[in-house]
Amino acid sequence: MTSKRHLTSTSDNDPFFERVYAVTRLIPHGRVTSYGAIAAYIGSPGAARMVGWALNKCHTQIEFIPAHRVVNRIGVLSGKHFFPGENTMKELLEAEGLKVEDNQVLNFEQHFWNPASELSDLDL
Image 1 (spheres, helix red, strand yellow):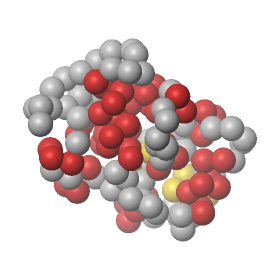
Image 2 (tube, one colour):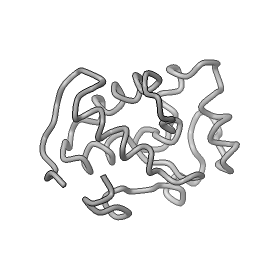
Image 3 (tube, rainbow, N blue to C red):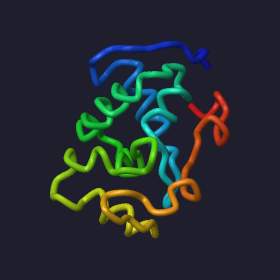
């Protein structure tokens, strides 16, 4: 396992994007995390927007990436515009048992999955 390090780039085939996708694939059904939590876990604190950029391009991946489970730091569905259909992200989350009101996950703290406390370096 390589150590976590600060990674920045813009290609969806680069190590930063791959690490974002690897963490996102591990988010459990019915849970959500934030762009910032993923960025911090992969060793790039402050790169939450870059995580969002990576997830906006995840449709190019062969393996499914549950990007709908990634929201902003207060539970708002800030990436909903990158899904087909106006309510797709909300519908996917509700299908997993989460409640969403006014484009925000209700009881966000209860459903928040923090990769830093849930995973070890070996999980990537």
